[in-house]
Amino acid sequence: MLFLRKLVIVTIVVAVALTEAQHKGRPYETRSKFVTKDAARDVSDALVNLARNISVQIRSKESKSEIISPLSIGSSMLLLLRASRGSTRQELLRLLGLEKYKRNDPKVPRNFGQLIEELLDDVRSKNVLESEPQWKEESKCISPEYADDDDEYEEYDDIDGASEQDVNIIRLANAIFVQNGTYDNEKLEVRVRRIYRSKIDNVDFFNSPDESKAVINQWVDQNTNGRIKEIITDQLSRDTTMVVANAMYFKAFWEDVFTAGATKPRKFFPNGESEESVEVDMMSHGGCFPYYASKELDARILGFPYKNKTTAMYIILPNKSNRKILQDLVGKLDANTLDELISNTTMRTASVLFPKMHITNSFELKSALRMLGLSSMFIQGRSNFSLLNTNMTSANSPTVGGVLHKVDLEVNEEGTEGGAVTATLMDRSLPSINFRVITPFVLAIRHDATKLLLFYGSVYDPSSE
Image (cartoon, rainbow, N blue to C red; front, side):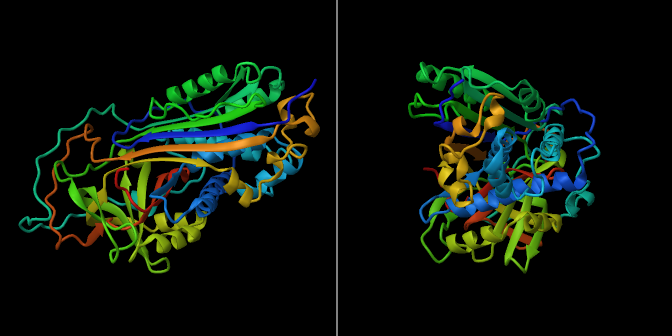
C-alpha cells in the first residue's frame, strides 16, 4: 500500500467564555495500576513547561497579547506521541521533558487520561496529585470596616443570584481526520478513543479538499459552541493526509462577581506607567482573594476563583511592569516556580481593578516547535508516525505540514446568576491589598487539583482591536 508522505496538519483549537461557570460531572473510571502521583505530576508539569517554552518562542515587540492554551497544545502533542516511533518519538519526549518514559510506556497516556478525567469531573474529593493551594484550606478572610465612599470607588446595588445548576463547563475534544485508506490500527484507535477522548474520521483530502476543510471547520464550530467558526482558512493541499484537531470550551462564573455598574474607562499602560497609555474598560471589585507577593520574582499574584473553587484565573503582576520586565518574568515561570507561587497564596482582603477584555489570537506554532527541538516530523523520509497503520513504515510516513492554534478568550464582570451576591463598598485606603492591573501581566487559568493550565500567557494591551 502506498501512502503520501506530505503534509500532516496538526490543528489546535480553543474557545472560552469566562463570564459564566457551569460544571457537569462525568463517570469516573477505575484508576489504572499505571497511574501514580509522580507520573501524573510529570505529565502535568510537562504541559506547563511546554507552555513556558512556547511563550518564550512566540513573544514579540508588537503583539498585544500572547495567550495560548497549554492543555490544547499539549493534548495534540501527546496524541502525536502515541502514534510515533523512532526519532520522532524521542524528539516529542524531549519536547515534553518526558525522556525517562521510553518506547510506548503506558504511564504517559494513562496518567494524562486520569488528569483529564479529574478535570472534567472536578468535584471529586480525592485527586491523584493530592495537593491544593494553601488558600483553599482557609476560611474567608475578614473584610475591613470601610469608610465613606469616594470618587474612585462607589456603592452599587446588589446583583441578583443565579440558580445552583449554573456551574463550570469544561469540554475537551480531540479528532483525527485522515485520508481514506491511510489509517488502519484498531488497537491504537481503541486507546485513542478511551484515553484521549478522540474520534477518527475518514475524509478525502485528495479528491475533495474543500469538502474536507468544511467537515473539519464544522467540527471546530460544534466543539467550541460557536465561539470559533473555523481554524482552517486557506485551501487544503491535495497532498494532505491527516489533520489532528483539538478543541476546548470553557465557561465559568466567578465565585465572587465584579461590582455591578462599576466598570468605566481608565488608563492602561502597555509599556509601563512612564510611557503612553491606552483607554480600556476597567472592572472594579473588593473582597477576599488568594494573594502572594514574591520578593524573589519581584512580582505579585492574585487569584479570581470560579464557582466550586476548583479552577481559578491567576494574575501575575510584576512590580513596575513593562513589556521587557514581563517577558523576563515569563522565562522564569517553569512548572515548579509557578506552582510554588500559587501554593503560597493566602486569602487577603483587597480592592481590585482589572481590565475587561476579549482576546483572539492565532498562531502557527511550527517555527516555535522547531526551535524547541522538533525536526524529524516536519521532514519527509525522517518523520515516523508508522503506528497509524500496520502496513506503514517510516519511509512512507506522513509529515507535519503545520501546527495551527487559535484562542478566543473573554473576561468580563458577568456570570452573576449563581447565588445571592452582596455589593461591596470599596475604599482605596482601607483594604490591606490594592491590586491595580494597569500594566502588562501574565494570565494563568488553572484547574488546581490537576495543575493543568487551560489558558496561559502575556497580556500587554487589553484594549479592543
